[in-house]
Image (cartoon, rainbow, N blue to C red; front, top):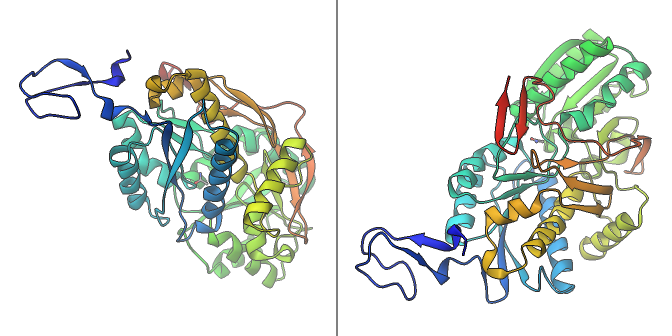
Length: 416
Ligand code: ACM
């Protein structure tokens, strides 16, 4: 019996069925604490359905629920039904933390799938670390995190930038104007971009941050006009992506001369802004909806069948989808319902691999991040991207690429 299937009773309070009072300080199994019960496993689904990042997160919620539905229709995970408990944290980090606590403590979810912004992931992290629960995070992010309580299935900076920055310098020139939303993700991502720019002969002509939800870019556009960069490097997120692209067009700027190069603009933001506003700008990511593979054809067809012919998949909804399948594989590796705990799922998830819509992916055992397939693509007026460069190999996740003295290992963060 695993230690986490027992409870160490202190005092005299009865903690569940069959537990009698008056036997302090004994180890006792409490059936009420089992995570898998009556052939069901509860999981939390924590994406914003309202607020400034709902533009992306609504699709992450949908992709997660699609995978759960498919898995249940095919017999479940090790024969058990996955039961999703959906919460709306409303694009607000404090609400994320409250809802995460509810899912982990009251609902007893064995894992939670959630978050787009790093601000919301940072807000929930203490909940998962304190309770030793497991958060499955599908979003590209800045790296520099080494938690035993998060499985990271989105790209980290080396997987989006290592090929992108030299490609951009070679194609457009060395002068970069950085524009990002004002929080940890864009700042750390730009920190790594600066290292690559220095290495490849590029330079930063300006670095600007706007508040989350910002929609008025005229002063930024004036600075772009006055500094005349070769590339506008964007880590703006949420609704602001739409405003920035539309105002760039309205200001008469030309992507052929001064394109935006983004790590955050996907098919879902393009659908919101309209293909005309996006056309000619570049994104680096491990997945685009046009990717040709049998797994992607199945994903796109199932997504459209459930959510409408106009709906799009993208480089965050794809990991939101495949990470549920990796969770299922981990449950099946554990096998027995009584042994299903967040900790055992984490251990079973290490080295799990599968053929996802983007190609074969794998959870790196050392740092719980994912091997992915970087690509560079240009947006087209029909709302899709054209892939211009596809990596020959999957790329190892290096969440500390900007910090060569630090390394995330199974034992934790090492420095030296
Ligand atoms: C992000 O905040 N990781 C996009």
